[in-house]
Amino acid sequence: MDAVPATDLVNGPVSALDPAVAARLRRSSDGLVAAIVQEAGTGDVLMLAWMDDEALHRTLTSGRATYWSRSRQEYWVKGATSGHHQYVKSVSLDCDGDALLVTVEQVGAACHTGTHTCFSDNLPVTDGEGARA
Image (cartoon, rainbow, N blue to C red; front, side):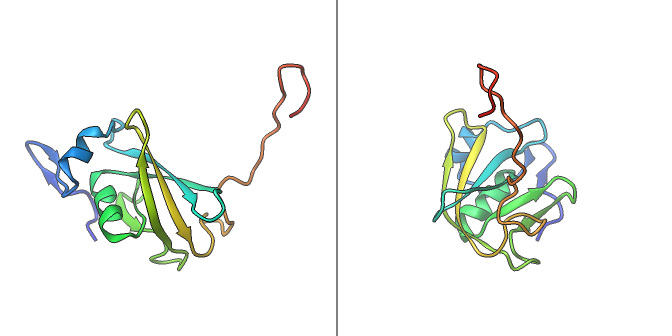
């Protein structure tokens, strides 16, 4: 896989993503869109990752969740090294175009720590009455 997104020096990143889909995306300053990953069977929110146009194209055309690693500056297919695969069931774009909901069949743990979901550290919440919810 490419180590960095393919780039056209005049027009910026190049991808085979459908231009109609690309036109609807509102990207961050580094060209990324948040991808919220949800498990199809349980509805559990599993993780948050990032996609650029090419990662989204690869996800839509392969059925395998593909993300852009901000720390490694490369594409990664969930499960390629861990065996904890994500098989994509659907991808939805939010109303603002700045987030994706990726619904997957999760095989194994979703979190790099080995837990089912990255969202397992619940914080205390106090309601408007001063009581804990």
